[in-house]
Length: 77
Image (cartoon, rainbow, N blue to C red; front, side, top):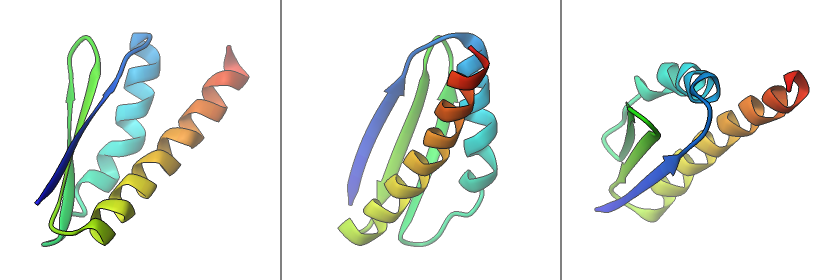
């Protein structure tokens, strides 16, 4: 099993936007990979995958969604 923890720190509004973007995709768990979100002071994303290909797919999905949030966040700042 491959696991990784990603910590995102920032303003509460930015973290809320990240959670809003990631929550719907989080529900699409497969036998090979999934991720969970935990928001407190920071946003903690825990990724678990059975193999490197599944891990890469989940990371690509997460970074793609966070990239969209980041682009829009920069526009409104």
